[in-house]
Amino acid sequence: MPPLLLLPSHCPAATHQPPTSARRRASLAALPCPRAGASPAPEALLPRGLRAESLPRHVAVVMDGNARWARARGLPSSVGHEAGRRALEEMARLSGAWGIRALTAFAFSNENWSRPKVEVDFLMGLFEQVIHDSVADFLREGIRLRVIGDLSRLPVSLQKISREAEEATRNNSLLDLTLAISYSGRREIVQACRKLAEKVQSKALRAEDIDEELFADELATGRASGGSPYPDLLIRTSGELRLSNFLLWQSAYSELFFTDTLWPDFGEADYLDALSSFQSRDRRFGERKF
Amino acid sequence: MNQSPPHMSQPSVIINLTLGLLWFIVHLAINIFSLWSRLIYNIESYLISIGLFPKYRKFQLERLKYLAIVVDSREAKNVAKIEQLLCWLSTIGVKYVCLYDIDGVLNKTFEPTMNGSRDVDSGNSHDVGANIKALICCRSEMTVEYISGSDGKEGIAKAANLLCSTYFNGDRDARGNDEIVFTEADMSGALKAIGCGGPEPDLLLVYGPARCHLGFPAWRLRYTEIMHMGPLNSMKYGAIVKAFYNFSKKYQNFGK
Image (cartoon, rainbow over all chains, first blue to last red; front, side, top):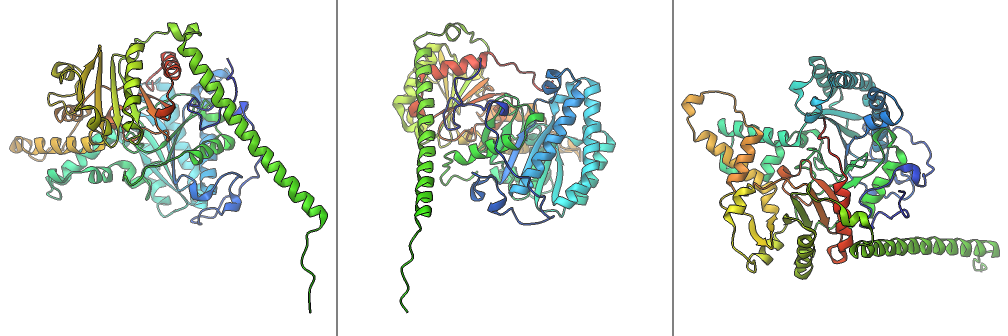
């Protein structure tokens, strides 16, 4: 049943947004790719309605819906994942152009290892190909790549290409792109605990000194996202309304934006909707540090 | 030399007036649209609450074993609204609700006036821990747990503290230089030991201006459905029923 009408984002019943095809699309000029290390885009490059001073500094995205997108078209899931790759590339380009400093994308969860081997092998190959093919673009566009997650489970070749890409792009500063592969929020918390225990073992720290700040420093994202490990905006596509073990610690104050759009269809207009929704929210967190 | 004062030509005045009128019309249209959507929302909530829609009367609540409510701390001071919310939830048939606000307003407000006893057995059965750091009371067959920000990130840091202390106070000679290995079960056990255990909610309703979970205990949020309900002052019984109905239709594959 179609919705009665299009609800504005401030209406509480608008728990999530309907697909883009049901809404007006903004007409936008193509945005140029900024030079590597350039300062954030001036206001003139932002689409109408967005204010540079209230854009999120760090955006996280759960890229959900590739397989459903492919099934809806009678195509194999591999086609959906390829289309999802293009959507991520576009989102990274837009993020850099609009001055967003960090983008963290949930590409593969710990639970995804239970999927059919054929699909898992395809995805590992796709990640390797994407990272390998994108390094030159990252260098040109000033993107710093980081990969977080349980990397020990990844194929050796993917581990190697990830390390090389991280090393090659480590001095870029326009956009921090973090790919969460084989990632689990709970595992990240346990790993942080283990690292603190190692510091206690080496007498660098006392157990009783462990607090929130020290704990946060040991999380993988603490090092991966430059100066803003906590996403201001967390987007999940395909209509699901949960975190699915993604950035459990870091998302305490993240604005959650859920949309019915499937990930391969998530484009510039959808991204603008998410950013506009973020800007329209009354985010009053007072003096509390997080 | 005197210059004649600048003046606007008639066409530019007309253009400015036209643009101003268009601006006013656009804003008026947006405001009307906003009012209309609020009206529709209120009407729908009312119709749901009087049971006009059969589907909202007949859905099954078995999947909703644990419900969590996050309330903005400023709005959590509205005791009457919280009481009303709990009453509605009890009426709908919710068996376990965890109430959270980051500053602990709910803890301070409801602990002194809590009816019923600190139910140790109930606490143990729900993994809240023997020390019952979270307050539990039984309200007409509904268990209510009150937690705050200190049960969230601070709780995880304390659990890490406990894990490290326990590990290094154990038999060091036997461990030698073994690599330190902690598991998720270890962390769950540590959280339970310090009274920050508790079940993972199936559904979390957020009341407040911002659509975020405000630091709800991260360890318990893995697969929780999260729905933003708007300000607590505007809460509607019909909106809660609709949220539960939508939840009952959800399917989770847990990543598989």
